[in-house]
Image 1 (tube, protein in one colour):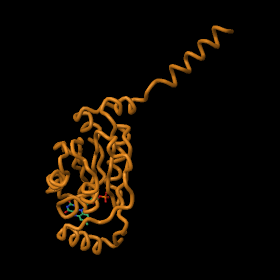
Image 2 (tube, protein in one colour):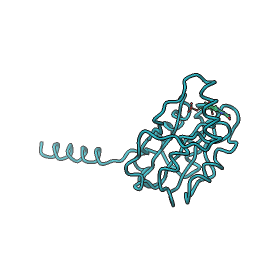
Image 3 (tube, rainbow, N blue to C red):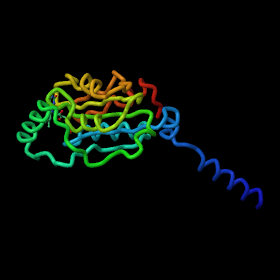
Image 4 (cartoon, protein in one colour):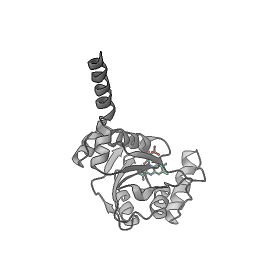
Length: 185
Ligand SMILES: Cc1cc2nc3c(=O)[nH]c(=O)nc-3n(C[C@H](O)[C@H](O)[C@H](O)COP(=O)(O)O)c2cc1C
């Protein structure tokens, strides 16, 4: 009986202490943050896939002022803001951003560049020396100036050029991309 209870305790300890594959990936690659902006959900889907694979922490970038729901009005406002280099005020802040070694930054392609909210995110923090991995979703235009502009706006960051560029919410290929970047599930 004593032996049986000893064995059960041992099994419980082994079972509880074993890290999940995602946790192991997290430990090997340092602390990971996945910050994304998404209006219609496509970039969110990619962000969630990255989270699932890497075990990083998700952060949704949101603006204080909500954008118009009507597509025509939304695109017109976005165009004005991009032309004016406007940086909308963001709702929440990542409290402990300095703890993260790697930050995935996700944006939809808006008029060939990143969304103004993502520009605000990059301007709001000191990300010098951080590994920044962009991921972009688009409606058929592809990467255009998104990654180039993100790199320019991310002062002193070590931006990984091989960002994810995908059509709308297409996520097949995300795992392979992360594997190529050295992440293990
Ligand atoms: C304001 C606005 C501008 C856009 N401009 C472009 C563009 O220039 N090129 C492109 O391929 N898609 C463009 N799109 C489509 C989005 O990039 C695409 O639908 C994206 O996946 C949306 O991401 P979300 O669902 O995370 O918001 C635009 C969408 C919006 C709302």
